[in-house]
Image (cartoon, rainbow, N blue to C red; front, side, top):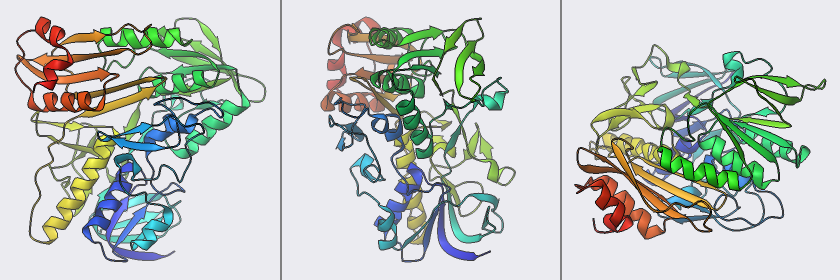
Length: 459
């Protein structure tokens, strides 16, 4: 057993960890003060690449959803139209926001100790001590919890046959490698995607582009129900159907059967139907990794409760990214947000707050505008704000058109509180963010529908 001490420890190896490390470097951390501890074997990377560019089929050339290059524009990653699959080191943090790429050797050059393939199994926040599975002890003065989320697995719910080979999930690069291997092994076969959210939509697109016969199954009345309205979802469902993706709604996978070699061969649905499958990919949600800290820190809404600087109820302990339940200033409530944009910005906020406090100063409270985006096939959408109240659609939402371009506004108490756009350009997306932040008064739903994107452009 070894024992090491650091002034700061970032626990986690995802997006938040990479961006926190970058901000510490920007703030002038001294050699030997900071360690990043991750159970993954690779340095922090831009996780969205795994459901997009990483699954690029060799020899094809596609826009948006796939590619090896990153172009920073309007605060998001655009995957450019370049043949070949995204691979490390191409998407290490922090290329996703136009920043410096932190290669494994970059951490050493900046005086940061990168401790990989190390799972922490015990955290004693009172003693400021972490213990690894190998028995190594890590002591800290300040801890940033950036442990992120883990996927919900069908085996967690006792689904029969859910442990069969080629029933796959996607969260980490090891998961993506398994998906790529299965795609190559079962080329042109049948794939079933369980779930109709981010993973369901992006992986259905990826598998179809890889020439699979794809069926997407989900229990809700339409896809992406936490964000999309029925009208928005109707566009994507029809678009996907036109691309050859079969969609089954209103039921769930209740069991699986396998070949004698253990590989899945059939998905049984609760409504009595069964689907042949060479690959099954499951995307039914995720849960924040907070179990190490149960009973030691205050929790709220499934995450670790923080203030606007991401300080927890325990002195010198901060929580960022997926695990943090923080005050969303513009709405006056507490929220936990699972998205790469928040993972980046919350990490930077926490480090700025830590360093400012050391100098006797402060930083402004975290004032976050919720932002979500996705890329699939030739589609590209962005959403800003809150999807509450009434909604109105505008623009061309005909899924048969080669370049559909449409949007939506959400109105609550007479104000526009959320904005969505498919196929928008940079200036239009900037305008959407501005209108969602300003929350202007809307005359009527009909007038919003008539003005469309021009309403946001005037704000």
